[in-house]
Image (cartoon, rainbow, N blue to C red; front, side):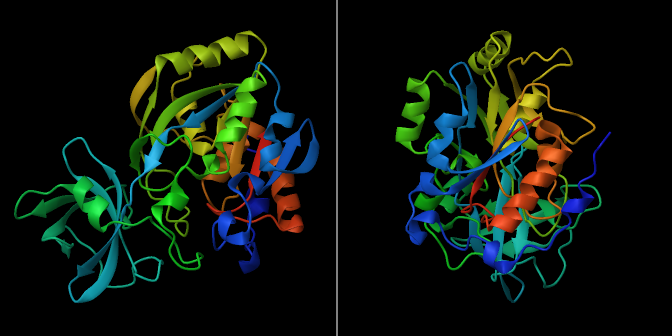
Length: 348
């Protein structure tokens, strides 16, 4: 039974939003704070201390998806807008979201099928259908151009990282790269992996902690919506599936770096607890009614109140652990969002 995260319905104080990257605050990536909850004990640490909380035989699973510069200036009718490219579909269309240039939800004329959004370099997005039933935020669209549409080239030339109103200014794509990002495709950075530095990964491996990749291309999060996660492209390779199963068989723990890794691994895990190679689209929504089968611990950032990610955390660590971690983080001034602090959560 879901333990109920309604108690986490909090208002995030402005001062707890990370408005800039750690580097702009005088910190290295791996110097952000990390709250660790293990066996009922909460410990305050820095992310670079991660190896002291893991042990030889554990396996850290990372997302090797890299972020696209998926925000493009646009016009809808006479109004300035920004178009966010969320993901590409098998039929060549893209899932898109129209946003206000101020980094908040679109406040202008409503979209409808056939609406035309003007983009740079003679490109246009022609709206077709709603992506999710009953939603008006995400739409499928054909991307058109006189000389043939090349969306990847359009994003490379005119795109920038997606950002939201809590950030102070814009930050270049370099600030949104993780050390694991080798497969371009995510609309937003898989941010749980951001605090890792090359030296930290080396220290983990040298200490006997394994590391294995999955790929999950994230769509847009649009933190104001509180919607369940959209379908996302993913792949769990054969070697990663074998390593996860071998780790469990040997008594080790599987630690997912982020909700994206958790979603991919759990999609590929059967009722018997074994992970199998798999690729395609995942629509899995995890919560306390569907506990994690493959993931024993989770490295994660701090999520906004009402975010569906909170229920995924519950599926891994349990509702009591999540509630206590968030209570302590709020009381202790941890920073939220993609440039904020981290947590390492294990089920009691």
